[in-house]
Amino acid sequence: MNIPKFSHEALLVDGTRQLVYTAISKHYFYFRMHISKYVLQQGSVPLNPFMLFDYFLLDGVDRDFVRSANNSIVLRADQIWVFGPISNGVLAEIMLAKKAHKPILYFAIEKPNKIFSILENVVEMESEVEQFRSILCS
Image (tube, rainbow, N blue to C red; front, side):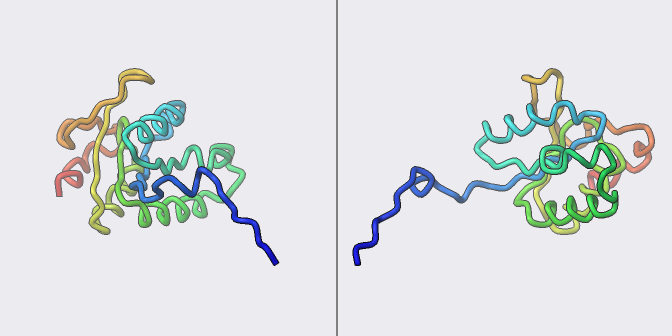
């Protein structure tokens, strides 16, 4: 019996790109597509919770289940990239990533098409977590 050989373009490209968890405050969720595009343009694969679990904004899924899913992605990602101001949820993701010894990069967003790298000591913190800034540098 002659079995045909399967061929597809996807089998010819590299599948070893870095997986990047994009940590974003809910106040910046409207930048989610721009952030995913930015990560792709940098040569990595975005694991963007606001793209993966968009429905959690409608509270259609138990919040702790979504947190568990996000934590699972953080632990499986190769790197964590933090975009915009740090909220309490993003700070928890940073702490989890630090405990797992994941590289963490920080980015500011001026406009949808203007995202740039910043140092952790100049990252903007939302008011309820400003008192925990030292966690970033630990």
